[in-house]
Amino acid sequence: MLSNRRIGEHSKVPVCKEKSCPHRIRFGENLSKLRKRKQLTQERVAEKMEVSARYIQNLEAGDNFPTLPILAQLKRVLHCSWDELFEGCERVAK
Image 1: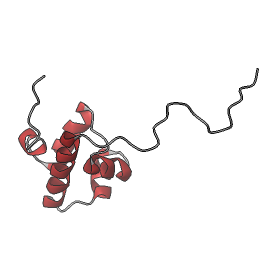
Image 2: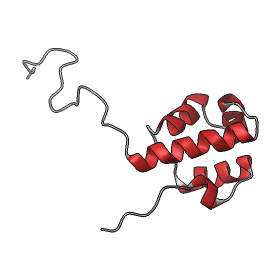
Image 3: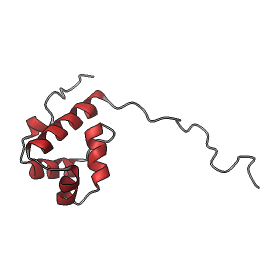
């Protein structure tokens, strides 16, 4: 049986992207600062990590948050500490 929906019509699909979490934004700012300190482009970091430059761009914009393995790679590529990566990202008590 065919649905009365038109092609591309979806229910409950958000029209715009949810606003980034303040912790992701802060992490992205830290990542950008650390990358620039090492005089690396987003493309070069992506190449060293074998991910896309768009992924690095999304991390820096606060649109994504990396998995633990990606965090470990970032730490290695940027020669930084965990504290530097997460500066200003204080834990929120529940």
